[in-house]
Image (cartoon, rainbow, N blue to C red; front, side, top):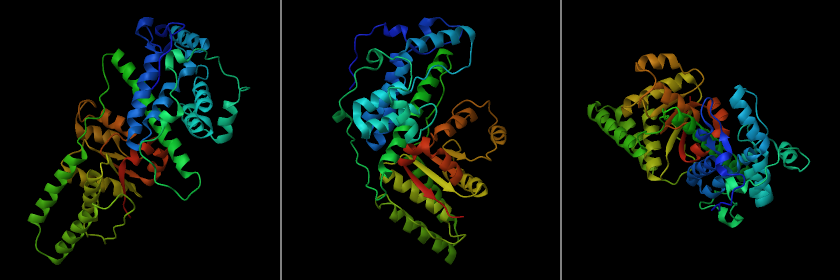
Length: 381
């Protein structure tokens, strides 16, 4: 746990974010921002057992903002409404993490912190920024705003990873996990601050849980069965469904489902995904499909089966936001508003995501913690 130090200058006079045309008392204190991002990042990372490491990343990510140069910059930016980038404020936290926690975990945290605005750097670039000769603004007395970092032993994971035969894969994967938690926490906390100042908090979350969606699908499948004619084809479809539901009790891993067209694999695979996710405490189902035409068809089948459109995110480059807005006939806000759907696309904050392999690959570096706590189902073309 971080221990606060005696601040100098006063914590209340050092800020993470400024506000145009508002008194300085309304600005976002750096100490508040660091604590809030650390707590939110830890909440995200709890799903894979690295919450304390993520908390440290959140606490350190913006300590460079305590420099006199950065504080002067946000005051000038406020006065002139300039859009230029301010002094480098991410290298400072990366250096502290590397110096405090060593070449393994310290470097992992440094990657995440150094890249929380610009994206993950390669090894050579990070090493260049960590060297003392790389110039950055002085960030003295940063402990007054972030607190004193806990010892390395306090950052130990609470859920071990499965071992990989590929050298370095576990470390590279963990870096992306921590990076995603930090970036998402920083974005959401900044969004929350500006929204609350305007008196219009941003609505996120509030979706149905997987247990409820599973029960809805069970009811729908039972209704289909009751209405279906007693034909050999329908008997085979029932057999496929029963087999995949039975298989949902297996431990998480890789599974295959080979069913010819017309065999009912779309709903059978969703049944497996929801049953498996609920049984093993997973939080999200991600469908990765090769073609957008299949995505649109699959997402529509899911909406009908689950009797909801607000808990399924159809995310691909060709998604027609305008057409969706017209179909919803709303102003974009509200529990099922399009604005909320757009926000969900930013970090896949939706219980069921249907996307392409290309979009999944692009989203990987940011969203991997979401996927790691998910049941990922891939459908063949």
